[in-house]
Length: 459
Ligand SMILES: [Ca+2]
Ligand SMILES: [Ca+2]
Ligand SMILES: [Ca+2]
Ligand SMILES: [Ca+2]
Image (tube, rainbow, N blue to C red):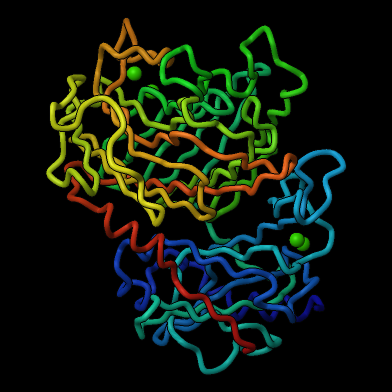
């Protein structure tokens, strides 16, 4: 595309730039839990744009009253990547985000154009003047007639209007095992102090919280919840600080992407599971952790794996809810006789929700098995200030567990393709809640299990 086209387009669109933050009418009629959903258009849905530079992909919405408006979006490239040296694709590979800049082939089949459902606008009848053919993206709630639209065109990067970002990702490496990484949107704040250690979780005023750190630390365990097991502190080093166990030692920060609508962080390896990958994606209203479980089995009797959240004493009072305890149980460091320390309901293969909320705000959690985990999984809970699980610092001076909720994979078959296993995948989403929020878990789980339909047609 030539320069005169770029300048014409800038003139046409320039007047719209100020209205970027105005909520479009149709998106406003979506339920709140739908407005905060990401919409992902894969490259193979817009084939005629193949090989277009990702910088030249532009997304607009049309408003019947006010015309065309640019939409905050980003294009994240992905490529098939071997899980270990010499791996043969596709069985021994995964579609991985390109963290090192440019894939070098423009938009291709597995790349993702992403924007938020809150950006959806009206249906347009014709393209903006001078704009070559692109795509109409129709987004609808499954089973409902309501639909919203955006339009994707190729245009010179110089002609694209700037749209402010909504996610900040800042990472400083302190030493080989420690980092100082903060993710902030106007709705929440998250902090990582190690590859696997998430130790700050706050609902911010944009979501109706007050910014208090609700969390002591997220806990990830193998074999035992106590220090006898491997903890999230050392999972990136396997065998402890002095024994990085080179044959197990592929624990790698794959990199990150920080764009206007999402930040993505990739990690590979967790102790004796070098082929596991974890991707954390941070959207303006929601964080999403995808774990591709690939590792040796944990046989019956091995005690399996745990992942749970442990809260901060300074954030109390908090109340914990799930589908089995809808009235909630107080998090106060004393086990509720009706919901004692240990394993509880089996975690449904189709998805579970949990929620923690108090006067400082809270979070709703959903967990789905997107590739079924070959082994029994239960909800686990511990609200026991005297139960020492070995990591974290709260309640001080002797760290116990406050409202520790999450999952226990009691045992699991081999999931490592390097040894013939079939990989499993779990997706955890967590969303900030307002102080004193009512139960949102059911609604969010429905949204996650039944995402928006995305249809692309030539326009
Ligand atoms: Ca690609
Ligand atoms: Ca590409
Ligand atoms: Ca903390
Ligand atoms: Ca604790």
